[in-house]
Amino acid sequence: MKNLKLLIIILSLSILYVGCKKQINQVQIADLGFFMQLPASWQVDPQEQTVFFETAKQDDNQGMVVDYDLDEGESLAEFIDSLIVEEQQLFEAQKKIMESMQEDDDEIIYETKILSRNPLTVDGLNAVELVSIANYTVHEVFIEHDEAVINVSFRCLPEDYPKNEPLFRKAIESIKIKRD
Image (cartoon, rainbow, N blue to C red; front, side, top):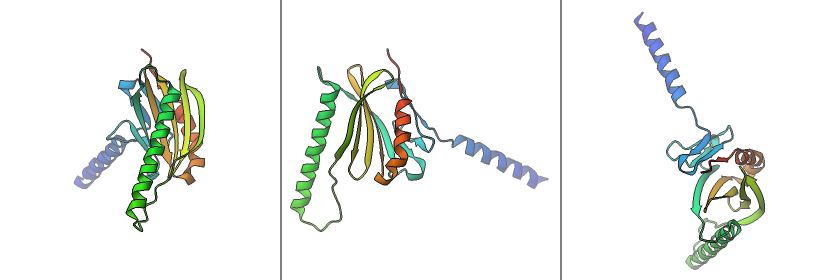
């Protein structure tokens, strides 16, 4: 009888543990009034609510939500242009450092190439979708909101992008941003 009670307790605790470990696949950021439904195979990082990842490939396939202030009078297009220029400058600087070290290091610095840049509307707000590739394919959207930009980015291994692209688009379409 004691063994049966012990077995019932262990089973109950196991069920409770599994229920508590349920993955969260909705990004909710109260400070931004932001909500996004993630693909079923993705989940929010339990330590950082602005970061998410594909459960099976969390080291490679990841994403995040970041907000930036726009400079006074700066447009969304100008903001994105400046990010692209900064990324190119960073690549050039890293390339020069690697060349000056002249080491036979296996470390490769990948230059980012823009595959597409398209205007769109996200939850009624002006936005730009940008897809780029370096060592990862990055699918991101920049959403203009008040005097700020909310950047939602997904990155995945290039070989995973054809499978993930429709999932990323569906997640982006699910974005809701609370207005004041």
